[in-house]
Amino acid sequence: MEWLYLFAAGLFEIVWATSQKYSQGFTRPLATLITLVTATASFVLLGLAMKHLHLGTAYAIWTGIGILGTSVLGILLFGEPVTLLRLSFMALILVGIIGLKLTY
Image (cartoon, rainbow, N blue to C red; front, side, top):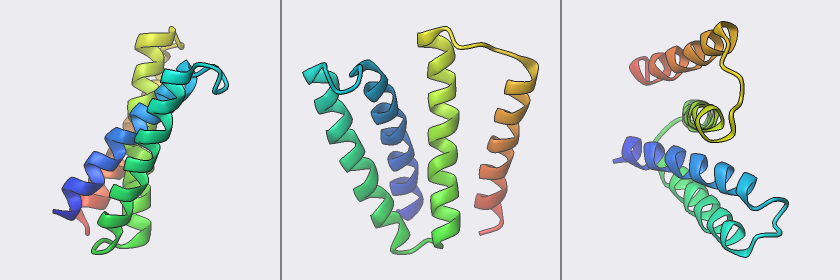
């Protein structure tokens, strides 16, 4: 169950980071509310996962999911650059997430 909590926490991190961009410095009420609610959900789920997972593993996977998801959404929604080097480093993060899970 803790891995499901961790995965969900990572997904909520993607949502709150993206909605924070849409909030334009917390000047848009709906985007701000989504940011605050999903950030809270992300932290709560991360905390639940950490009850049974190692701190370093849980935190690294949580941030890795957030990094990958927000990077992809940045490309898709905000026209951020897609370069071979950037995609290569994103792939390394994915390999790190998988490696941490496999070696837990």
